[in-house]
Image: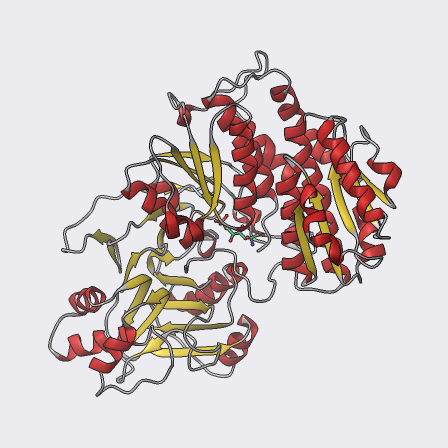
Length: 597
Ligand code: M6R
C-alpha cells in the first residue's frame, strides 16, 4: 500500500532524507514514487516504477528546498503513470499533497472544481485544488488545509506542502500517520511525519501516534490539534527496535531473514509471561478476562492464525469461530457476551479494522492480537496482546504467524481453565526446536525437486489444517504457482479430481492418534493417484511409509507441532520462489499493509 514521508529541519539533506525514507517503505508495495520540496516555489519530481526511476529523474535536475514530502503509490484510481504518481499539485503549483487511502466523494468534488485543470486520474488530486480554492479566497494556509479536509469523505492520511510556508500539515482518518520527534540540528529540530515508523527510524526512536481526526503542523515545533483547532496533549513514545532490525543482516531476502528470526521472536513473545518454574502463564494485559465465547476476525495469514485460535478455545469447551474480516460485516453473527478478537500483524488492515469497529459499535468487548504497538487496531481495542515479533518487512508474513500462534496459546492458557500441563514445557522448548529445524530442514532439496510442478496441494487436520492453508498461501504469493490448502478430509469431496502425478501433495501429520491415522488414509488416497507425496511429520504415524519425501519434525505437543510444520513449509515456499527467481520480498500486486477494503 502507499507510503508517506515528510520532514522539516533536514536542510540540504531534505531530498535525500525523503528518498531514503521512501526506500524503507518499499516493502509496503508500490508502483510509483515522488517527492516535493518547499520554498517560495515548490519543486516536484515523480516517476512511475521503482524508486530507482525517481532517483534517476532527480539526478537529471537540481532540486533543493525544504520542508519536503514524499510518497510511494500503490494504484487504486488510475494506472501507475508519472501523472498519477504523488505528490499532486493544484493549478498554480503552490500546493502539493500526498495521500494514502481513498476519497469516496472525489467525483462530486471534481465536478464542483470544474474551473480547475486536473492532470491525473486520481481521487487525490481534488485535495490540492480544494486547498487552492481556499487560499484564493484569502484563507491562511493552515485553515485552508483544514477546510479542504473537511470536504473529504473516505479514508485518508494526507500531508501537504504550500509554497512560501515553512510548515507541513498533516491529518488522518482510517489510515495511519505517525510523527518522529528528532534532535535539534543546525537546521532546527528534525521532525518527521510518515505512514510507518521505519521511514524515519534511522533518525529518531521517539514517536507520536496521531488519532483519527487529529491535525498536525510541523515547522520549528510540532503541534497536534483536533478538528476544531484545539491543541491536544500527546505523549511521546519510544520504539524499542533498532534501525538495523529493518536491514537484511546479510540474508538475500527479508523473508529468509525473518524466517530465521523466529526463535528470537518466539522467545520475546514468551518473555515474562511464562513462569519458568511453576509452568503457569500470566499475561498482565489479560487480567480478569474469562471469555464465554470468542469471535475472531482477521485476513490472510492472520485468518489462518484465527482458525488455529478458534480450535484452541473450542477444545476448552468455549464456543469460538474465526471469520474472514472482509465478510464479517456482511452478516454480523449474534455477539452476545462473546469476546471479539482482531488478529492482525500490522494493526492497520482496513477489513479487520472495520470488522472490529462493527463489533465495538454493537457493544462487544474487543482484544487486539497484533505486532504493532501504536497501530489503529491496537488503539481502538479494549485490550491488546502484543506478539512482540519485531518489525516484519517481507510482504509474506512468516515470523509474525509463528508468534501469533504462540500468543494464542498464551491467550487460552491465561483466560480459560486449560491446564498448563504438557503445553507450557512444549511452548518453552519451541524456540530451541525452531532453531534446530532451521539448522537442518531438508526443505531446500524438496524445493529443488518440485519447483517446476504446475500445482501444489497442502493437506492437514485439526491444528495442521490452518498450517496447510498457510503453506499454500505462502507458496502462491511468493512463487506465483497455483497452490491450494485443504482440510485433509475434504480432498475426496472434490479437489482429488485435480490430483495427478504432476501435483505434489504436502501432507502435514503429527502424533499417533486417530486424527493422524485418518490423515495417513488421505495420503494413501493421493498416493493411489500417483501424486508425489511430501510428508511433514514427526514419524509418530505411518505417513512416512507412503511418502516420496519426508520433512522431519521433532516430537512435541500438537499445538507446537503446527508452528514447527509451518517453518518447514515456509522454507519450501521460499526455496521454490528463489529457484524461480521471483522478487520474494515484494511479490507482484501485493502490499504489506492493506489499508483499503
Ligand atoms: O497485517 P495483517 O495481519 O492484518 O495482514 C493480513 C493479510 O493481509 C496478510 O496476512 C497477508 O495475507 C500476507 N501477505 C500473507 O503473507
